[in-house]
Length: 187
View 1: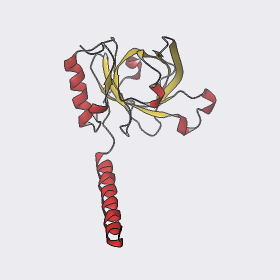
View 2 (view 1 turned 120 degrees about the vertical axis):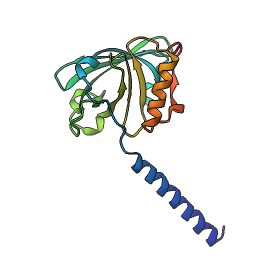
View 3 (view 1 turned 30 degrees about the vertical axis):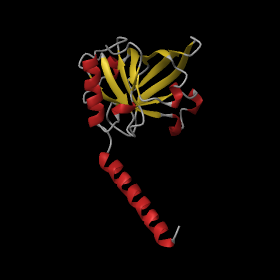
């Protein structure tokens, strides 16, 4: 490879990185739900669809989460699912209002041991991006757009509702093509 070809390759790489960074900066943080009520959010939610992630790799069926209010700003979380052997696995965690924002729809969750709770690195963003008025279906995700879930109080939702949530997710900068739906959860 000659010197001119190398310089052209480096220049093209730098330009690509620049445009990717500009798109990321321009995209900003996704909007969250206005007037969100943490107390109304409490209870059981079933996972309808999600962007696959490493911490759910072992889950093959029945993914759900139970949220319980501890204080006005904190909640306990119990996530559960069945693994490939049919064993029900549970992860206990906590959620809290994100201290960086005055927005109650911008939460943080932690599944690391409680004694590590003082470390900001063990808390993950959990933002309520869309929720129906009766708090029966919700779209939650992270501001970096790596994580996204459709959750519902029932174990299934209509195809129309699901597609509407995917359109909303796309408008907020998420890639709906990455979503994986559970078996029988969309009808």
